[in-house]
Image (cartoon, rainbow over all chains, first blue to last red; front, side):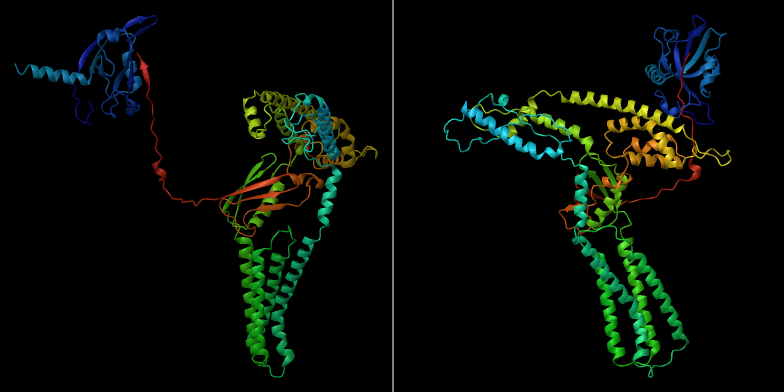
Length: 128
Length: 507
């Protein structure tokens, strides 16, 4: 999932739609993010490439909207509602996720196991 | 019954003798202890043979009073000891002998070149070639070199002796012998080749005298290096511990013989170590005595087991609460000292506000009001005297300071515009030995106890002891290790920083 500067990034992504839950005054999604271009990528436990400055899911609240929607810990968030998440600061990412006017966030996430799953399914079903 | 009474009488008699011999320490503390009986039977010549009858009640029928006072000296004893020591003749004799030898050698060295120059004029003036300009120039050179040599020798060798060491100073002896041989060999050459043959080349003679003075200056340089410079570079780290209370200091010394190292250490001792206060040691001694006395050894079977093993075993098994007492006693003492100190500080500050320095511009006061420092000190002393005395008593320092010395110190502080805190500093903390009056130095006699010869050099691991009347200083030596240093260059532009953040935000 590392990128080559100047080349388009390709990845196998999964689309996840999370309904925000209203808790008192706030709308919460039920997970925590880490990473960003202003953070130290070497501290990220989930990234394969330790120079990857993308946004990763570091924690999922059990029973929260994110878990219900199928988000898993360690997922890298590529897009939020169409906004790119691969080259943003931590604060920008947070802002895109917590817009008050939106009830739903549609994420494009990628994880290592996705690639393997796709390969397996392609291997099982050769070109039809 | 008969044996019992005899027992009692004997023990009483024995202890009475001991009591008499310690009567002059009557000013020290005493506590009553019961001594364990000696191992051999008291009545050695008794006609009773067979089983020894040990009366179990002997402890209750006898009184043994032994003084547990430490060896304390009264003021008269101190004066007597120092007078005895200073009257001894032996060491003074040696000092005079070395002085006379030094003076004789010095005169010999100084007058030899002059003699070399003057003798030809006296003995064969007609044969002598006249002295040209170069030769007369050499006269000036001889004169100034001799002057420099004179000043240098005076500076190096004729300083007041600061100590009498047990053995002679090896380097000085070597140098003296070297100088003597040197001068003698020059005289030999001179007398054989010049006096006998009556050489007429005066310039050669003058040059010979100049070469002698040059060589003497070089020998003096050698003396400076050997005696002064060699020991400046620190080579050993010595650890000096006082045997009575464990005060320890560390010093760096160069390559010295053991006696010179001991001298350097004693000079440091007088400046650095707080004064030795025997009154502070009485508490631990009484604890030790109580510990020993708490055990009574009885013979049950009539055999005499080895006393020490039995006592150690018994002591190990016994439940001792003396640590508890020590803790509470020390806490109480600490509190008391702090309270007295607070009272003292307040009293002194108040006393100092009673006087002020008179300014010159002030209108003249009546002569009765104007005081000099001594009178001012005497005026304000009574208001702080009680608090000060109580404090000194609590910290067991009252024998170090006399009223006279306190008043003198007060006058000194007033004269130099010192604050009350500065005045109190010398009483709140025990200072180095030199700060106190001469009678506290307790004899400047030190004994050097060493297994190696005292003129041999210091080595790694050498140990020696400096014994004084009251205590001893134990000195151990360690060699300063060889230091291997390497360098590393840092480019000033290489200091760069990045943020190390890793925030986690929950959304």
